[in-house]
Image 1 (cartoon, helix red, strand yellow):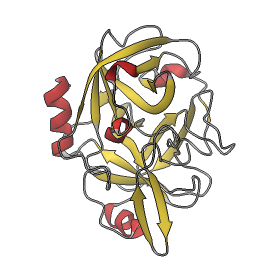
Image 2 (cartoon, one colour):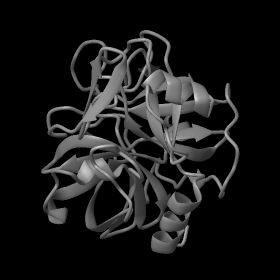
Image 3 (cartoon, rainbow, N blue to C red):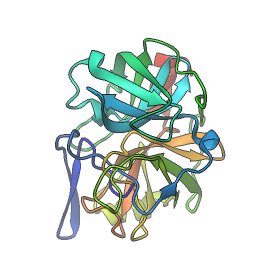
Length: 256
């Protein structure tokens, strides 16, 4: 899960870091430096989001009929009928259950070039339920995420081998304070985002985008963006679910 580039690519240039969107069908954030999930019961909320049956992003179950993911996962996804989720399996190819999407909603303030308000909710045709499938609780409005708090991420993104992982990978990452996050990115990181990670060799990467960050059994963030080269000593960006506009959007659409 080393790089967060599913619908985007982060280009490091001199002292600044710029975001550039590219085809998410090719680049997806993934977990770099993680390990195989051994107890899937702890990750029963995780979903593999698929387009024409190819893994493109991670997502989370937040209600029987609703999934939460990153808005940029839909940048090149034009037909909702071609979107589905595999849940209840650590393997992105087999097992579990395939459930198709019915409609999706993107945050009205989403900005593709900057990944601001990079959040979307997806309603499914049938219930997101079955063996090893259950919703994750969402953190409340304006909840503080103190620096040093450790969050857990999981996904099937690109690993150090350079390929998407077959089995679900997990990794723990520390959250940064907002000032250090902005300084590291050489630009102001608004409160709809937060940084986590930054240790060389341990990161999210292509294919992990849209997946959840979880703290103490509650989802606090969504994998959004990261450095082009997965696993370098550079923090990844996460959607801050506690942001009032983001939390209100989720609640308005899903009642969660």
